[in-house]
Image 1 (cartoon, rainbow, N blue to C red):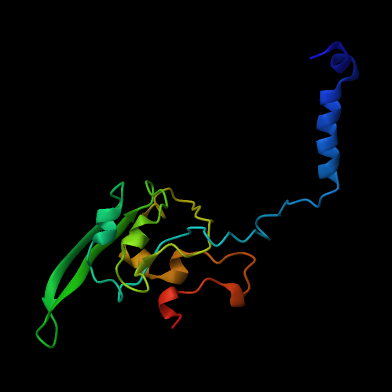
Image 2 (tube, rainbow, N blue to C red; image 1 turned 90 degrees about the horizontal axis):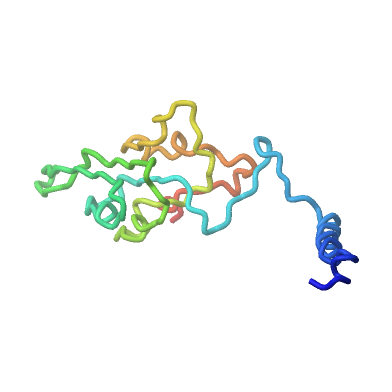
Length: 165
C-alpha cells in the first residue's frame, strides 16, 4: 500500500460504496412464521412413500450410501394364488439422512414410489425422537407427515406425483 492510499483511506471508501449500493435495494427479509420464501424447484423436502406403487425391490435401501433405509417384507398368496410381496417394515432414520436423493433415483417404478418432492423445510418438533425416525405409517400419510407450506395457496400446494395422472 502506498502512502497516498493510507492517507486517503481508499479501501474504506470502496467498502462504503458497496454498502451505499445495497442501501437502495429492497430488503430480502421475511417475517418467517407468517410468511416464508418458497424453496427452489431443486429443493429436496420430506419423504413420502406410495405403498401401492412400491414393488418391494429394496433398491432404495441398497443405493443409500449411509444405510438409513430398513425394509422387511414377506411373501403371501393373493386371491388368485399368485405370490405377492407385503411390506412388514419400511423405516427411515432421519437423524443420519443427507437428502442426497439416491433412494429416489434408484426406484424403478414410474412415477417413483418414494420421493422427496415436498416443499416443506419446517421439520422441527418438540420431542427429539418424534420425527427423526419415520416408519411406514408416517411415510405413507402425506398430510400427517408434512406440515403445510405457510405462504402456499391451495393451487400451488405440493401434489402427490402418483396422483397427477
